Image 1 (cartoon, rainbow, N blue to C red):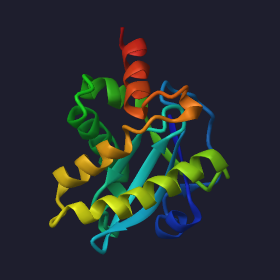
Image 2 (image 1 turned 180 degrees about the horizontal axis):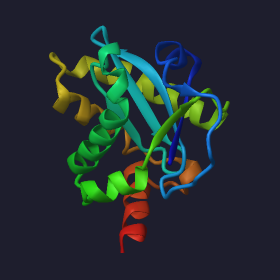
Image 3 (image 1 turned 120 degrees about the vertical axis):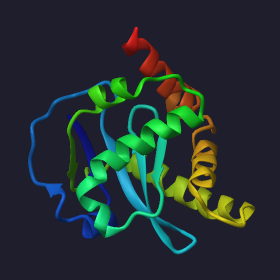
Image 4 (image 1 turned 30 degrees about the vertical axis):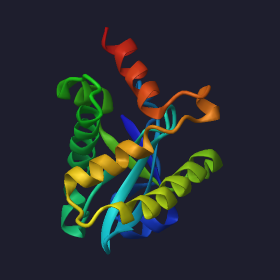
Length: 170
């Protein structure tokens, strides 16, 4: 089971999916935190992995897709890994993500800071593009996954995510 902790802003949008309590079952990816951001006046969801600071963005999210948000997350996570040339099998991702549950914020200041940093970076990067489609969003997200972080021992988020996948899939 994968726990995704939402910011208050996102919680207001997806309140039907937010659960009060659930079982604590740890998986290889650990927990994720999520928030909402707007790119070209379109609502997007940004997810940050707590172990690797790896980012995933679901572009053009609408309320009609709320019931299949689990599938959207897995699909966008897998697509982002493939876009960044991290070799992984979809079945491996589905098996290790498992069931997804959304929860109220866990007030993790470190991850909240990284979410805010990434949102401000997206606001800056979006001026480099004239149109916004899925491949542009993937490219922007790739740029979020390449700066090194001190908390990761100066490693890159996509490098740490690749290590997590390689050590588990062997």
